Image (cartoon, rainbow, N blue to C red):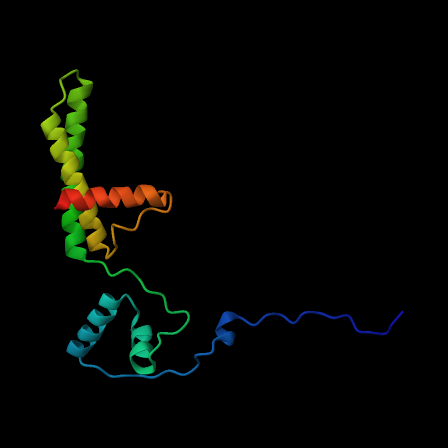
Length: 153
């Protein structure tokens, strides 16, 4: 038997005690300057602190995350259009369920509107529609992209 003391792991420090950035730098801005800086941060997808670190130090830092710049007006207009298309598709479905013949021209027009709205949503969210969903196989995504490119031309 040895006379070694029992080893106990020290309690981990809280995250706030482990932060390496302990110094603050205060910058005074006019309302116009602040609006310009905030707009630049929004367009770049960074928070203000990360934008300043990137501008001054050349790097936003390891924990800096980009957020999606969103075009609010385009998004609201697109959501309104999406409601209109959904309403029209619902009316077409109701008529089909009532036994009426399908109006292929109306259905085709609404589906085309839907595709346009999908692209507009990607645009408003600052995303690239060419990047497929994670569940969609890469080859299928490539074929869909080629079809979209041909239909836009």
